[in-house]
Image 1 (cartoon, rainbow, N blue to C red):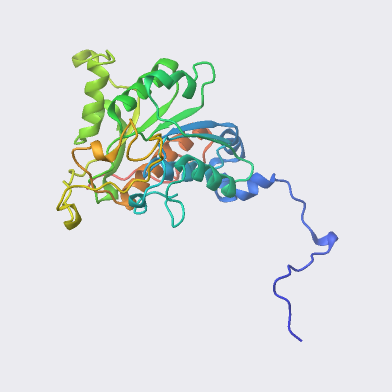
Image 2 (image 1 turned 90 degrees about the horizontal axis):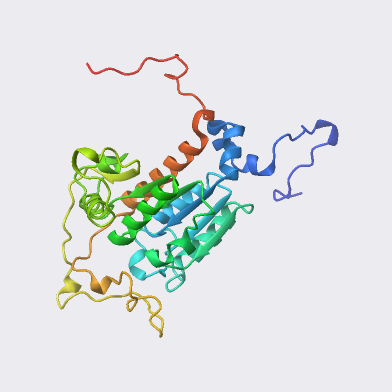
Length: 312
């Protein structure tokens, strides 16, 4: 007689152990063991807004959803393009032309059915700042994964004005070595052209202090110490770059959009998922560690059980 291996064995009532945890805690059991139950409660109660959910932001969202963040708002105007497949988590066979934010929101719900997630198909710009990041409804954290200099600088400035913690991704393109990804104050990053452009924009356009009066920005930035690699044009660019982005008839998204179309770029950078994903996951870790704070499990050094390593 064959046994039905698809059915779970029935445990007699008298042998069952009482379940003291909430279902959500057991779903994230392995994380709770690092954050503590009280720390995890903070994550479940937190609201994080992610601006830009492409190669970096998409993986940041993945990290946040798998860390039990209770509420997410995902802001991105773009739709999936065939050229996103190499680095964007929602770019799959059959998703080309669909909203990146909506696809990620659905993925988050499958990871954690209890999550409250909102997808907003919009491009962050000054005139829409109040609608996308209201002054009277401050989130617990913002992740900036925008790749447009003026929009990025304005978002950073707005978060500073509203006293909203923000972690900002600098340039992940043109890099092949994920081990060189670092976190530092925005004004302490080095070797990153995007960070340099953002600092210049903040000082010249948004009147941030310069020179000896600048001090730290108070904004955590993710960057790479790897020297930027200039792209090698493939053979199919012999007659010039050809955009593959899908576009709507009214030009509201795709190659004809008014925001950041690839046809308007002077250079198409190369990118690798094992770098962009690390940028995104580091951003998620910055958020989670900041929210959990002192409630996290202690390291051996913090417990006094191990001495810090010293240089030989």
